[in-house]
Length: 481
Image 1 (cartoon, one colour):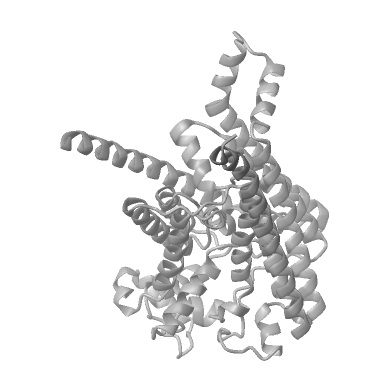
Image 2 (cartoon, helix red, strand yellow):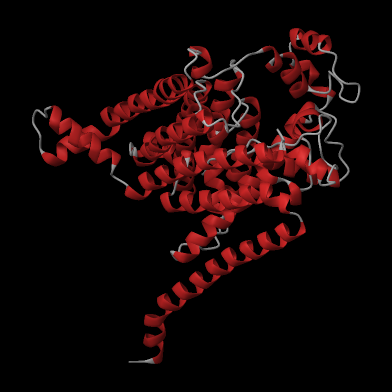
């Protein structure tokens, strides 16, 4: 056998070992840094919890190719429900684990205020994620695979949010007078002008006048187990999830299933087998959904237990005790959801960089009053996002799926524009596909289903717009030829 032939045969094995070693190095590096950080102060365990859960999420997301943008695109472009089914499986399971955490008294969840902004935010976010080629979580795990287009999406999401929440007084003209009056009546702190921009007026003059809650809080029977597991889990998440799965089966999977098995008039048993076949069509996605549901609930429990142990309600309090006061909000808080969440920490990163470049990004409600603007090194949720990227990289390297992918100009433009729309949609809707849908629904907050409806509609419009672009490009290329 020639030398070239020998190299060709041995190359895959070599690459597999190299990928495995690199994956082991990442895990070892995170472990060593964790030990070093804990040696400095054991209270950093709170931040490290976010890191390690991020690693777990990254592994699971990459394993199941778990992405809401893919789910929407596959549904409307090729009528394949695989990814959507995985998302629904994760939703149902997380509702159970979240219920256990709530009953145990460790839940850190707060319901979103209910209003028109949710569906509009979801629509903008859904439209943008189709062009971006990935949702918020999908862009993180794809970045861990070496996809530079997804990295551009993350950059765009970060800066678009930071600029959107800090637009300045020029945008006041777009806010209704009722928002201005309501914001002024609340007596905003002098450091934060009540008319500092559209987003401030949106918060103080609109969002703060709304209310929200969970199904359990609405039932309020006095029996916590009943309210949580029947209200939040069964009524708020599991039954709606089953309804969505039935719709997916009837509209996308059933026709092909009946045709493949040549069933002239399928009975109930045939329909049940078909439904189950749809549920198990992609074991990887289904298993990833199961894992995400378990780990998302477990993170809530661990974070809640740490808050009880350190007698804090927010990581900002712990940072203050540790002497890290720079970057805390006026309320001495920082963004600290306590569960799987994306986009707000990316907004903080964008705001922190802009501040370093000379822009005052703390003179607004979002950063100055609520979420703070901490140094990225002590931003716990941001480290969760880093963990997701690293976790995805670990599995991608192990499976020989890591590859640097450089986008062309068109793809890069779509990534930047789509990411910007996702950032704006996330801020209008008060969250993304994870925070405004997944975490909300599974904790009994029905506003999550409204966000999903908006995101799905936005995704449908995005698919249609993208197809129109492709058709126009094709016709233009044929004309030029």
